[in-house]
Structures are given as structure tokens and as C-alpha cells.
Image (cartoon, rainbow, N blue to C red; front, side, top):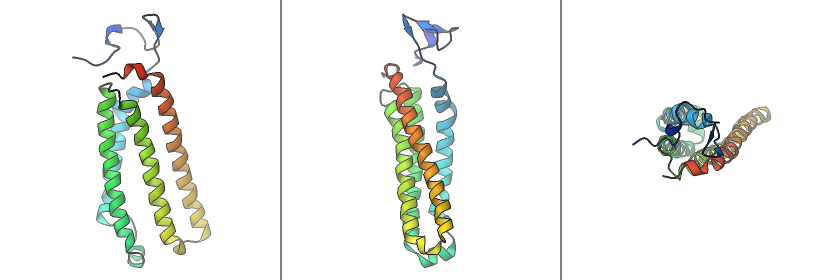
Length: 169
């Protein structure tokens, strides 16, 4: 059985009027399930490797701050979990599960929280190594990442709230 609610309307565009209701386009949804979530899973799973192998920090930094090895290992586990969550979310979206919209919003929120926590923790431990300019550049990078993740949380929340009735399995 095919779960796609649009199969009964082959030959019509997503924005065509169907059953007296105007359907919203699903291009972002299709991009998420066919490209973005697979890519996110791969990036997170592969991105966890340096945290497990101890290569995310230089040897000098790890020698001076050995606690970073433990923090990196924990962050690697969380990053690996984010990759697994991206795959789970992809299948929930593709199956039109009622929890799928919350999962996609949660995925981006989870990424925001773990990234922010990791960067704040590492910076607080290693701040004595950096010049003020380095801290500003790192802060700008973290800030940009935060802005993007917050925007993704908000945009996905709005997008899937409008399409909530489709996710009813």
C-alpha cells in the first residue's frame, strides 16, 4: 500500500485545488526525505569519527586539557545519535507518521543544543589558549550556526504545521 496521499491526483500539481481545499506544495518535504536527511545522517555519522579517534583537537591541546578527550567522546556519541535520528526522521516523514513534524523540528533543535553546549564547554576550558580575535571568530562561527539552526526550527515548524493533516498515520 502506498502512503502518499497525493497518488489519487496524478497529473495535477501539488497546488491544484482538490476536494474543495487548496493543497500546499510539498517541495521542501520531498527535498528533506530524498536529499537533506540522508545527507545530514552521513555528515553526522562521518563527522563523529574524529571525536571517537581523538583527532578533533591537536595533541598539544589534549595534553594540556585531558578532559577534552572525554568531552569529545561524549559529543561524538551525541553526533552519532543525531545521524541515527536523521534516518529515523526520514522514514517517519516518508511514512506520513503523525510524529514526523515534531521529529524534524526536534532534530534541528537537538543539533542546536548539542553544538552550542559542546562549543561553550570547549571554549570555557581552552579560552586561555586563544587571543581575543580567535574567540571573536569562533563566536561568530557558533553564532552563525545558531542562527541557521533556529531558522530551520522555526521554518520547519511553520511548514509542517500547515501540512499537519497529511501526517496522520
